Image (tube, rainbow over all chains, first blue to last red; front, side, top):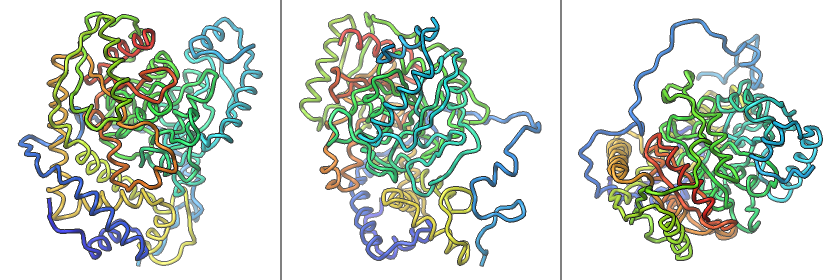
Length: 96
Length: 460
């Protein structure tokens, strides 16, 4: 595990990737929290797993269904929870 | 009629045609409203109508706020999902409705399941009915609190990622059954961590949890991780006999445990022994890595799951201003609570280029070691027995003083079995005491933990 402390710049970068706008106060608080948490997780450094990773707790096979048309949500149902819609479509913020 | 009866008695009365459903519903909702004012256990109450058919005959079932319920706000304890009315039912809810269960409301929880004490909810903090100054546990705090407080037939549909069924069941002195990963469909669950989430029941008696599991378990083509397992009546696994059962007691699970809990759980194990079970101590040497591995995996998965909340399709909406980056960031910063932000940051960090191998992939490998520890133990034992939580329910005022890592460390006993996808039951080691006896079984060995739990319920 990386040994250096988490810098404020790293937290700012992570927040940007996470699409979170954080105040200076929040950034400092999460920097400290992350440092404390990662310090406690140093225990993992001692583990030497020479095995495969378990992405699921039980072995799972790929499951596919027959390629057949099925009932799905209607347009009205899909749009029922949004305030931002226009002519039967979701309306999003501008791209640039 | 007196409705202070058990679920089993309710079903018998209903089958005999002795339930006046309008009177029953009226009294049930009156009681639920009264309890909710006192303890903040439900995000909303839904005055449904009871259907009288089999298997549940109008039995009241509460649903955790993170399980989609058609037409009822399903907000996973988060402001970012405020006002979200799902246009569909989760498979587990659909099965309960098809079995004539009556959905009575959505139970309060930590935001997205992020917490051990249910203090991270946008809809108030549920209070423990055994002592309102103390926590219900989390994250299914409302589900366990309501089960303890409501002295009428009721079962709660809850969910666990790293201990969110067992912990509140222990703190509220009720029964929590976490099924094997994949036994119950996750379709319609508002995901926290896909490789860890499990929907399961909380009830007053072991029978109640076995009954609800029988209704909700079984393969679902809508969930690709759902196991190909035939439907089964889990109430038939109940027994009052533990003769010849082999119980393993993990040594690591008694380190740093409150002395009162240690004493009470050992007394429970000795009682099982006195009734014919055999116990032996067992080593699960990789337990020490479980907490770190769990939090890395869980937050990494959570940070991707929470990427979908951006104020466009449901939940919190703001005025469409700025470009997509600015708008999404603004909505997310306003809608997520502190703990959700913290976990998104931790999870994003653990998946970031340069850190991914050191944190995320290593944690996934360590998870294999933990699964292997359990598999080895279950070659010798039918069930493992341990305390559910290392502490008694803390006062809400004391929780506010704990740092995030101090709070995470309270999950030390529940995360290993959750990480390995093993089934488990937490039940009161002593009646009305907030001390959980945790019975853990091998994958798909729900029958064995139900047998041990139902027998202990009788001998307790």
